[in-house]
Length: 218
Image 1 (spheres, rainbow, N blue to C red):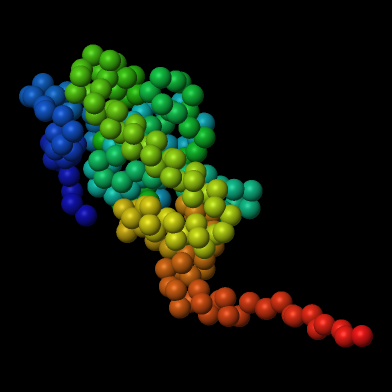
Image 2 (tube, one colour; image 1 turned 90 degrees about the vertical axis):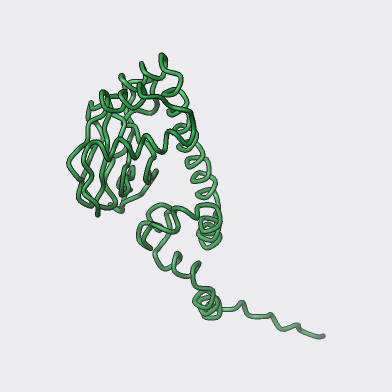
């Protein structure tokens, strides 16, 4: 994993931003003024704990963040994921003080830039380019949420996994089997079956077949 210094980290975000809007030196200066480079997060480090009053936006430079919670049986569930150049807020959105109902953790060793939510909101309202950037992050977040909710509505867990592979190719390429299971609320075995048609066929063959009732003739 690369050791990013502050200038390299903000340049990474600048390059992403530049892909969505023409920028000037003042925009580069804004990154330098408003963002803080956090020490590299080791895998499974808790960046934000549910119930905390911290109001920050976290931009992934390298690695991956996830919003997680534990279900009634103590199993981890992944609710949202932020990969490189994406933003994860500790508030539900920029215009509320209500915090998210989950922890934010590092799924990998992760490099993160931090900005206070208030600073991001005020800049969005006064700087056109920041408004565009926050809209890009918002649309990415809402799209992921919509797809995730649609996947969880699929009652057939095998079909849920297959749909994930089709609709979430970026995440499918970086998540482990265990993480896919936690994201889709299925077993690891089901994830493996979805990725291995031969395994799925063997599983289907082992299922007991309904007995045909013999017809009785008078």
